Amino acid sequence: MEFRDFNDARTLARWLEERDENKLDALFKSALEVKRRFRGEGIYLRGLIEISNICRKNCLYCGIRSGNRNVERYELTDEQVLEEARFSLEAGYGSVVLQGGERSDGVFTERISRLVYKIKKLDAGGGRGLGITLSLGEQSREVYREWFRAGAHRYLLRIESSDRRLYESIHPSGPLHGYDNRIKALEDLKSEGYIMGTGVMIGLPGQTVEHLAGDLLFFKKIGAAMVGMGPYIPHPDTPMGASGVRLCPDSSADAGKLLLSLKMVALLRHLLPGANIAATTALQVLAPDGRERALLAGANVVMPNMTDVSVRKNYQLYSGKSGLEDTAQDTKDKLVQNLDRLGIRVEWNEWGDPGKQMPDCILGNR
Ligand code: SAM
Ligand code: SF4
Image (cartoon, helix red, strand yellow):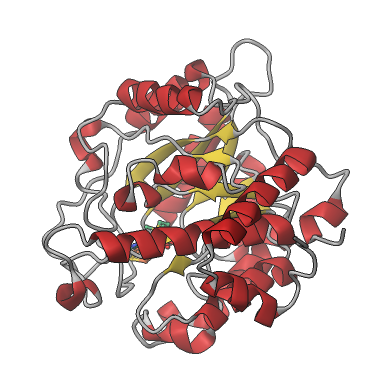
C-alpha cells in the first residue's frame, strides 16, 4: 500500500472516511514507522500544570468559560506551581506546560514572567533545566516576547478549527473571539521565536471530514512544529454541551470519535514527519487506553497531569475528565505502567524538540 501524497485534501478526506480495518491498520503501522524514522524510538513527557481556571473568554464549548457560574474559580499559588514544576523535574519529565484560562491584565502577565523565570532556575544540578511550554491563550506580541525572554520557548494555541465559519460557530461573536486574532497570535508566536504548536477539536457539531482534511493542511501551511488534536467532548454547563451531553457513555459514538482522532494523528504524522504530536488527555475519556493508542498511531508526546488534587475538579473543560482524584505520583505510576506494558520507551529528562537540523521534515517536504 502506498502512503504518498497526503498533501491533497481529497486524499486526506477519503482516509478519514476509510472503514476497512486492514487498510487502517496499515496506515497506523506506517505512521508509527515514520515517527520512529524521524523522531526516534521513544516518546517525550511534559508535566501539565493547570495554573488557573479564571478566563476572560466565553468559548461556547469550554467548561471553564467565563459565563459558567457553576465553577469554583481558583489560582494556584506561586509555591504550588513551583512545587509541581519541581516534581516534574525530579520525575524526569524534562518539560512542563503551564496551561490556564486567558487573562491579559498586568498582574497576570507579570506573574507568568516571574514563574517562568523561577522554573528555569530550579535545576541546581547545572543542567539546562525544564523546557517550558505555555498555553495561556491569545496575548499581545509584547507579552509573548516578555514570556519568551523569561525562558519559555514553546507555546500551544489551538486554532480549534481552521475553517473560519466553523470557528465562528463555536465562539461568541465580537472582536475578543475573532478568527483573525487567533491567526495573528499564531504568526506572532513564530515571529517571537517560539516553537509554535496548534491543534483542533475533532467531532465538533457541523464538522465534516473536509474540514478536518483542511485542518491537517493548515498545520503544515502555518508551520506548526507541535500539534495537539483531541476529541470534542460536551460539557453540560456550556451552550454547545447543554443539549448534546450524554448521560451515560455512548460506546458507538465514542468509538467513532476515537477512530477519527487516531486517523487524524496518523495522517498528520505522514504530513509532518518531524513534528511533536500529542496523545491528548481527552482521548482517555473515550477509551481508557485512548492516549496509548494514539502513541501507536504516530503521536510522540504525553502530558501527565501535575495539578494539585484539591483543584483538579475545577479544571474540567469537558465532562468525564479522568484521574480527578490522582496525585501527580499516581498519574506517573499509572502512565509508566501502561507504557511499559505496551513496550513504549520514554526519553526521560529530554526536551525532545523537533531538530532544527531537519526543517524539511517539520514542513513535511520529504
Ligand atoms: N485558554 C487557553 C486556550 O484556549 O488556548 C488554554 C486552555 S484551553 C482550556 C485548552 C484547550 O482545551 C482549548 O484549546 C480547547 O481545544 C480545549 N477544550 C476546551 N473545551 C473542550 C471540550 N469541551 N472538549 C474538548 N476540548 C476542549
Ligand atoms: Fe478560556 Fe481557553 Fe476555555 Fe476559551 S478554551 S473559555 S480561552 S480556557
